[in-house]
Image (tube, rainbow, N blue to C red; front, top):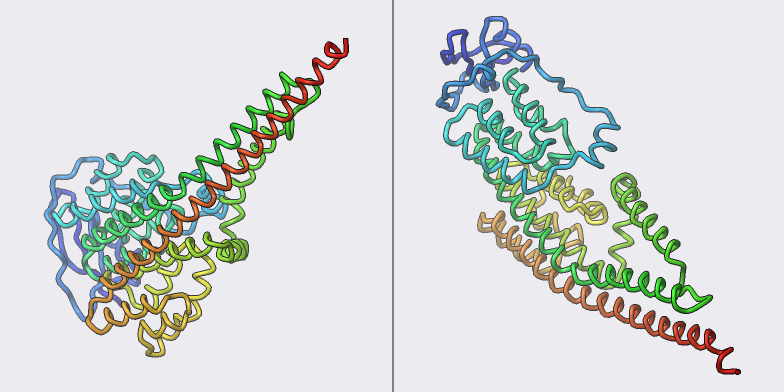
Length: 419
């Protein structure tokens, strides 16, 4: 039967450390609670008793020490996770970055995990994250790892985050993993901001084009009798509203479906310019994720699989997934990446150098920077081309508006001219 090491608070508020036998975490935690102990930390010992990292516990508030019913551990319903969670259950990356950065700092300072979670729950600006953190606090009070609470909310915490945190919990360096995770999230935020910045111009031009078309239709309808432009204003507004709602439903509910997402990503990859740009940014995400997971001590095969998931691109993931087994067969990382045929020779040379020198995580970051620069260049070119095309369309429509206006104006005054 496994031996579990625990740290707990007795009824008089004193810290107690020791070991207990139990079939699993839940059994060991239940035994401690029956003895009147409030569990603060519980981990399985391997090869006998191993030292538990010392933690300095500040006086806890009465609400923290009060016994609480352990929250459920089973997976939430499909509706909660994949419908409600996808539509309104997300948490901004900026909130997650702040949470993990502060959690890592507090744990490194020796603050009790329960107290750290309770403090951070009060500091976060996201109501959803506050709810999840408080529930996770109750899991920790029941003697469970933090990841037990986090993994119930896949719309908030990705598999990559869960894997890094679980490795930190099992290895006793959770504070360091939280810090690395916050750095990874910060780089992800910067990459997403880069994509938004480079694609802003065509989006702005297209939006302005819609306004011009609707405005021109309204002018034609009011000034030129019998003319209404390309389409009546109410029909245009209806069409735009349906398109926006349809895209929102497609993106949130239909696109996450595996086969649909795979077909969509393949279609995007085949588009001129845009396909290479999307591929570049996906590979940049892969490099960032793989580097963070590799540095965090996640097994290489698992790290490669999770990094493929982190790309958010099913077309790229489909190329990488089949090669994961090669690592288990003894193949090198560079050899495995080359077999995917998704990486350029320059990138493979960089990873080969990193693998030989032992600085693979740094080389993976450089690989990400290479793809980010390449994607940024293509994004700027694509934005310029799309912007010019949008302006040509708007210019053509303005010319059409002018012709319709003067034609309607001439028809209105034709009777007076005949007299």
